[in-house]
Image (cartoon, rainbow, N blue to C red; front, side, top):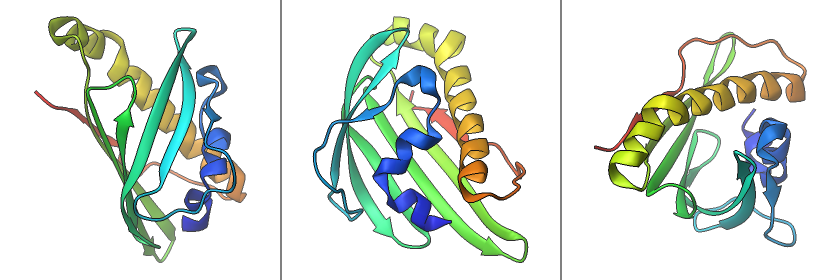
Length: 147
């Protein structure tokens, strides 16, 4: 399971097509602490550059990516992997904040959190398809905003 996430090229395969995810960092990327990944996504049709850095890398149990540059004021995504008798449990914990003060809070309440949940639901199905396995939701991803 973890090897799927160790390949940054798989990000496009597990991201909804409407985001038009495109890695811009040239060459082969090797997952490790400190790796910077530049990519573009499209939100509401607008291209947005995003740079993430791998802040913590502890295979096969966990890694954490944080936004260095992008659409959020703050973004931290922790990926946890736990082996159990039935397979592997994948947990996603996202902590984020939007820019623009009150406007960002309105966008968060009206649209952004819902879209993020949709993206992670898509990701769950896409990972299962990529691996050729069945999956089920044990608990939804934890997506919280900074106040």
